[in-house]
Length: 274
Image 1 (cartoon, rainbow, N blue to C red):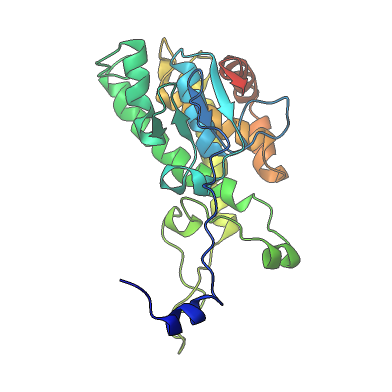
Image 2: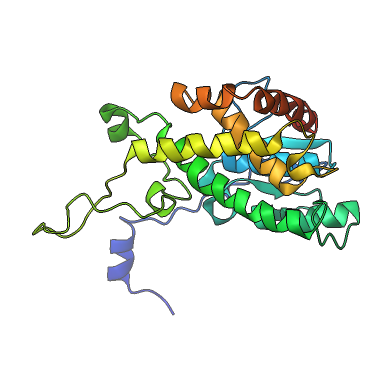
């Protein structure tokens, strides 16, 4: 059907331009497994400053996997689910964090690990309590230890909200800022830093006491997921926070510092910079 001349004259003022397709910078898959992480503190380090990424780095290394490349130029917004880490495989497949254990089992040909490396069922059950302490009291202290951006920086940047906000971790849940008798709708949260610090100190002391002089936590003969979790938090506290209270509480326990140093060497050598 031919366009009427009147409309053709009008369309001449709005020409249609077609541009060539924009090809991706690299359509090639990596030569080996590559872990996408938040950047390390320096070009010489291979360990992420993000405790969530570091947990999975430690998990892979302590499972015995090695020669895993790390990629640090991917924004969390470009990752699956908007969260790092992701694992990019040589076949082009991209795995979110929750599928990393399944991939590790397939690579290591370990189909069943009912005790996950713990010495018995009692140790496995006890590990859940320690995971709760780390993900609760210790993680809360790590969040309040993060530096607060200046007012100017908050205006020109859009900082990413933490995956687990502080108010969702603290127990009991903090009250709202507006108060129960306020005429305004409830908003914000009133977090008590002293309460968090007190629980954090008790938690670190309990971890140091339970570790003692053992090679691995809970007396295991081999590293477990709990060891990976503890290392991630200890390393982040010692090297990725400027809060002296949080860091000094760990340095008071010589066994924790020595244990972190030994495990750090094991974790770091498992990765290469891509």
